[in-house]
Image (tube, rainbow, N blue to C red; front, side):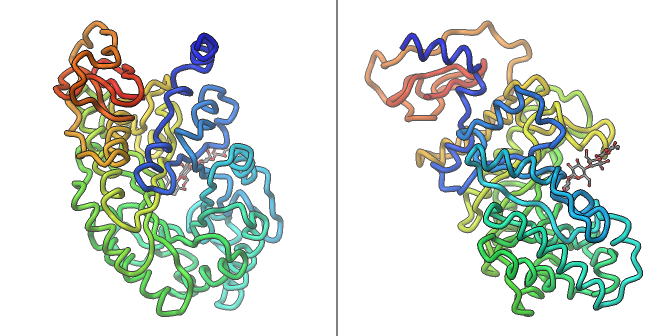
Length: 406
Ligand code: G3I
């Protein structure tokens, strides 16, 4: 007991309390993961959290496996950046989502500006995919084979691949991937599919084109780069996911972040962010064939968003000091409810303007022997009217508005 207490202090609360992946598996998902920025791996606090298998049991390289990183010049393959996260995953027993092959962005100039015909560009795609998949053979749980082939208006994106090959670059890429590594699941991956609009329509068409060509496609990745307050409802998201599972492919959320459109967020905005996250996770839990959930980074300390959308951000589950945000609590609660078969928790209640003095968590076991929360259930917090005791585990305060049986 004494040794455990000391260990808990030494490891820090994040390491001890990690549970998103554990709950996700209990709830029936295959994993709960995060991308890893290759440049962040010297940050020990960051690494301690993401190495916690109970928190993240799947990882994806943020940039290292993109074409400009792996084959910057024709025929010159460079594995340094791509191997960073692959090695972390292997050492830590985490699933590796691999990202990405045929994509118009982070594409080296020699491909983007080359003077290709049908035959020569097909050979370039096939060589890249075969070489990369063989290098990572047996390591990738999924590959994002084609990324972002539709533009924001729901038209085919005007990439070198589409200009030279029309839509044939889709089956060409998927055939090449299956041939090179039959053991990995092959995904099409894109953003803004969540809004069920023209872009979603063309993506449904894309899956059909690939299938009609007889090419293998196992899944569609919903990236989930969303905005606080504009995220569709749980039911609407689930309906959109089902448009794809109806085609016989699985779906996954692959790059979720939900950004504030203005900074700093006020407390209500933090609550709305938590509810938006809960809706996205909940939609996956509601759909047979939605198999996993990946966030595009977990801390506000590191994110692509401020570079692309100046003035926006704070989109992650942990703040920039690695504290858990209300959004973390929401995600944890939705997963816990599904894991224990209970009803979904109500929307997150607003945190108090000035958090009240910290009260000790309720003691265990309950004095009355009445209804208590099960493992991972909520057992206290500001505004909480439910059970304040645990039938399993101990009630532990996570923050002033949320205590949980752990
Ligand atoms: O590595 C160079 C460095 O050498 C150079 O000094 C520096 C100067 O700007 O740039 C560095 O490269 C940057 C790279 O991230 C690594 O940090 C690029 O400029 C920057 O554009 C690149 O941004 C990445 C972005 O994809 C590019 O499209 C983000 O980190 C990455 O999070 C983002 O991820 C994409 C997914 O792959 C696909 N879906 C959308 C998602 C968000 O945009």
